[in-house]
Length: 108
Length: 114
Image (cartoon, rainbow over the protein chains, first blue to last red):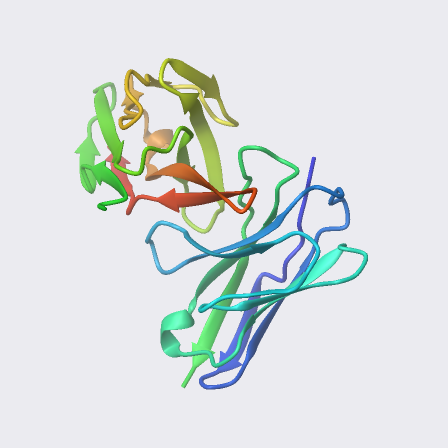
């Protein structure tokens, strides 16, 4: 089974960059890395995905290591509204499997 | 576009009652999913569908049934509700984006069984 490992929780000061790590050592060559977040009890929200190259969109940047065994989601200027649970998922399982994620607390 | 719409948002059931959680999407997505989320836990897949007339079990299907008669609708039926089914239920549908499988979720349905 595809499996990712994330720290259970992290803190970040408001206005600073939040760097959320994820290990996905069992990922295969054609499997994507996805990031979603869940604010309070809302439905999860798609953030970004990548295969090999680093990716950036209006929400975040995704840095994938060259061996693809880990990645980092970067929120460049975290705000209080970024407080949420962040899920890192590899597409080895279809449908996607959501673990417990990382609870990011942005602190004023 | 409304995206994925779930009803009801909240419901309290008595043990043994039955009900249907409704899910509708207006994005013409073929793939639809039902997840449940217990407090402090990740999402667990109940059932999914790859198109009208096709459904398949996920990780935790017991106590639930689904049907997919149209592309838009994917209702989840709870028969003989039990306290263990107290949870938040999320419906989702898939858009294939740049070769990847991107999920759009509904706002959730919070169910309490007493």
